[in-house]
Amino acid sequence: MTMDLFEQAPPAPWAEALCEGAVVLRRFAVATDAELLDGIERVAKQVPFRQMQTPGGHTMSVAMTCCGDWGWVTDRRGYRYQPQDPVSGEPWPAMPEVFNALAVDAAETAGYAGFEPDSCLINRYSPGAKMGLHQDKDEDDFDQPIVSVSLGVPATFQFGGLLRSERPQRVPLAHGDVVVWGGPARLRYHGVLTLKTSDHPLTGIYRYNLTFRRAW
Ligand code: SIN
Ligand code: FE2
Image (cartoon, protein in one colour):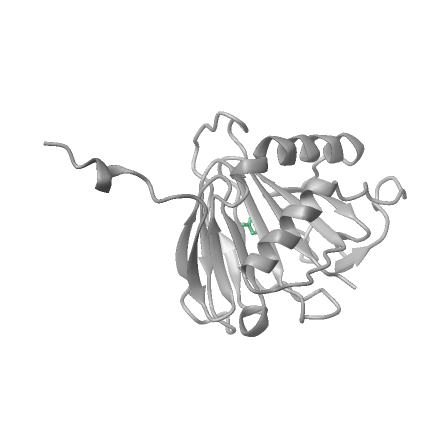
């Protein structure tokens, strides 16, 4: 006996609320995955992925590059946004139009119409890389949401509360999933658990994450 009706995956994309102000748009970026990965490759040709230093002197396990008007950087002097790549002194690569369109569309779908991202941080996780719990709070204005796109190898996202002490939810994120948080959820702690060794047909061993913000 077969139960085809129940074995089929739900139609994509679909939304799952995390809390007031935060939602996962499942598979939202799958339709444009090839263009997004091509954009990552073009940005990384201009500004290669680098493992930056934290203010405390540790090397981050996640490698990063940026595009848009503002790039997020960290070194011994602290975390900040700046208009040039600190290594070359050149402006960051322009944000590919496919990036901007996806971010605006995802924000609107999540209830944040009028999102105008001016910064996209591109994170690359290899097996063993992780990101500790943190708040995104280096931006000038918290009225605009964060839009966070997962591509490639799956990961476990941690989504916590407004206090670091609050135990985070564990949210599995697959290729094409987009998390949007804003409003009352804008300053929630979040992070990514250690990436497991895996293989994705489009990205190999890597997981990429695009994080869109309005920095200024
Ligand atoms: C971040 O918080 O910057 C990254 C989140 C993620 O990789 O999913
Ligand atoms: Fe973050």
